[in-house]
Length: 111
Length: 113
Image (cartoon, rainbow over all chains, first blue to last red; front, side, top):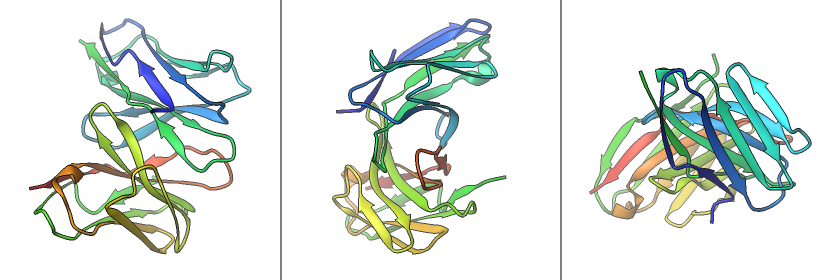
């Protein structure tokens, strides 16, 4: 089963609204990353949050991490049509090489 | 501008053919990865390499092999393509020595008929 699982699977909002996506995972992690994928393209790294951090900001992005609940959320504020994409969380386990990706949340921002 | 390139965006092959997917990165990264992406399943790791001539199996290595003769190039080989290998293939690279972001290529959409 996937280490990271995003929720919801799909989200449709109006331009200007905030979008919140959640990620849950099963085992302890070194860090958690969020990536964006535009339709039919490769993934682009958005933000990395380490296991000893609780919150991180980057522009209109805000990521939180709750290691006690094994969950993270990605908030995109004041969304734009250009934010339409799939968003993936990815986790790295301690001592491991592998990064485990979830199945993603598809975000659609209507202009 | 950092870059990971893949040899083809779209590829159509017949069942039983040997297929080569090439990936090149210009960032001097030690780690390189091959994933396949299927709807509802996210990205699944096929193989990764942490140095020249070194490779490790990922979660779904069956039916695939890899080659890394030079640091910048990582090849994925489908020895005998089958229809269940129709998928999007993504290559990525990263620095070594801990958890670092991965840089992805644009992907190759492979169809096996």
